[in-house]
Structure formats: structure tokens, C-alpha cells
Amino acid sequence: MVSLENYPDVIQQILLEYSTHQPAYGDVEMELIFDRDRGRYQLVCTGWSKQRRIYGSLIHIDIKGDQIWIQNDGTEVGVANLLVDKGIPKQNIVLAYHSPSLRQFTEFAVG
Image (cartoon, rainbow, N blue to C red):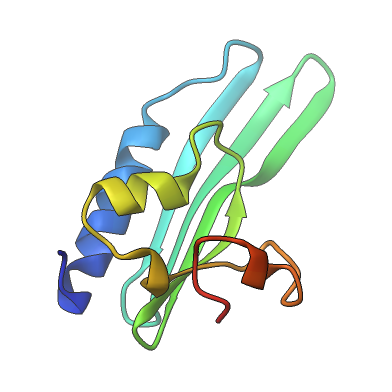
């Protein structure tokens, strides 16, 4: 099991891995945003595809207290599953992109 003090390292490792995946279309850059002091981590896509602007958060994770709050997850695998694989207990992960009333039906924390 991973200790709370190592959560930032685990999150950064996952986001670093995803930042190396380039979209198959357009001129898109994967930008990492880490704010360890405030417990905020993002992977943002920026660029252009033909004449269309590409901008958005692929992954957004916050650390609140002793829990990891996944605010946005645009991955196929699911960031929560990757965190569990790295040793973070499900009860310490909140799927914040689900409504508070629906979180009780997941295997993860309600927040």
C-alpha cells in the first residue's frame, strides 16, 4: 500500500506516462501541470487539428486531505484503476466526475 506522502509521486508518474502519448491527428501538445503545494495535477491537450482549436483537460486530479479526487478522466483504462494498480486503496479515491448521489454505487470513496 502506498503512503499518503507518496501520492503526488504516483500521480505524476501516471500523468508523465500519458503525456508521451501523442494524438494521431493534428498538431497537439500534451502539457503537464503540477502544483504539488496545492495538490493539483493536470494533463492538458493544446493545439490545432486542421482549422479547429484543440484544448482540454485529459486528466485532472486533486489531493484533498487523504483522498485523491479524480475531477476528469479522459482515458480508456481509467486513472482510478491505474492508481489501484500502483497500491492506492479504493477507499482513498473519489470519482469526482460522478454526481455525489451516484458515488455510493461505485467501488470507490464517496468523498
